[in-house]
Length: 502
Image (tube, rainbow, N blue to C red; front, side, top):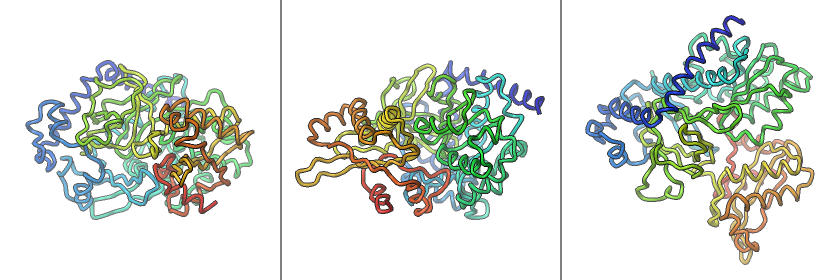
């Protein structure tokens, strides 16, 4: 196994040179990809509709093709789901990633072309390993197996050649045979629908394996870790898997979970690497071991545009290309991809922490914010405030959500939080005060509304009972890796539903 590990590590490091190339020439790489995408799709129904053959510049592309979202592309995608081809993308599309994005009932079906699988999703997975091997020359990850927490849906068949499922299920189904050898548990367990049964089966199947890495969403990884420790009677995961050396994670901010993982895996050598991938594409990787910034991956068949968040509701908003973005400004991400998503707003917001090379931090969602009173609180603000409140009161958070409290008579409005603690704060009132004070520090609009409680009063925070969010997700049939608790909402839908269960 040591020889195999050496070969794999050497192969993975070869890719670093290509990554350094797009870091050095980012604008050239992006410009080339845009022209490749446009010329590839010029004979599709979409390409003919917008006369892709005559598009020669980025400006023409932006002027001619309107910004899209799932609802505007849905009529085209629904035809593709019935087997029609050459609509948004020229190659045959047989696979769709089913995505809920939030806990709402409506599902999205994102087309996944052969090119998107190979040049984006799989390439991103390989680059994650390449970066890890480059940063960790003594890595022995390939001497054992990678534990992967897959999605919660089996692959389903719509018609003869069309299949859909969670992105992770689509990827697992299309992995090369050799990759299957290096992952655990086997496919029959990894793709189980019943998440409660699946966690039990995963724990039983993996405790005897030599697990050297784990990949998955932090919330569900913690659930699995506790089940493994319960079955084995151990105090941490290193007692079960002594060669565990890396954890690859994404989908939610890792900061609130960091302290819990240090307890689950008490090793100063444990390597944590964040990725930014979604059903629509693989966008970023944490390429530096001493920084949480994500390197924007520019050669995956995706052309990026960025819309300043303050212009989100403009009638014809003007987007920025990479050379126009500025540091620390909030942007909505818009992509054109080798799966036929054209000028598609993915719903995430980011800001740039570095230019040349372009590194980003995810700040939230275009729809996950609280702005009932002009306070514009985004997830990044909330995470900063919660992190500080936890640090000062020795608390650990398992899950949370928040929403507005609307004006009532003479009373000011406010924010209502439901927080489930993994470890209770030493002083709950202090926790709430620090949360409020930090929000005022990081968000001047919130601070202005909080002045003398005139528009916003002190936050109302519920110390939620154990497993309340698990119970809520289960009741909605939303247990599983892809489903996340919505952190912030500009209405009371989620909070009111959860309060009824408390």
